[in-house]
Amino acid sequence: MYATRPDDPEAWTGREQIVEHWIAGRDEPGEWTFDWKLLGVDGGRAFVQGRTDYRGDSRSYDNLWIIQLTGDGRATAFTEWYMPRT
Image (cartoon, rainbow, N blue to C red; front, side, top):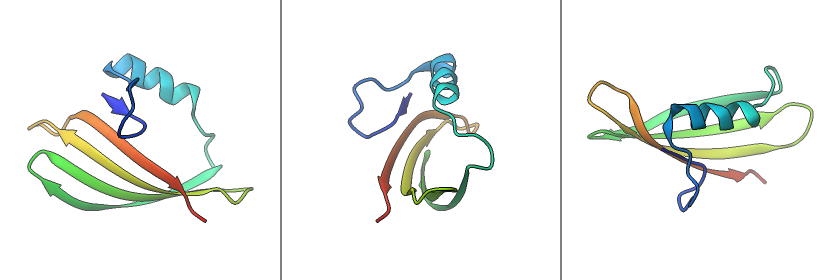
């Protein structure tokens, strides 16, 4: 499951649907930069803070990801929060 916001009623499910949505909304290489840091891990849940900056305009976003992982490190759920930087 991939939710593009915490209360997303239409979260993407399954690898094929997630890949389809990522490709449809992709940004071209070189149009953006992304920096991130791992905030912590609690059992099988990881917390990541990021920042996305787009070149050529002033769009920048703060990101927070919560990722649920299996014992072998595969993600079973991914929820993101992103908000424009002002």
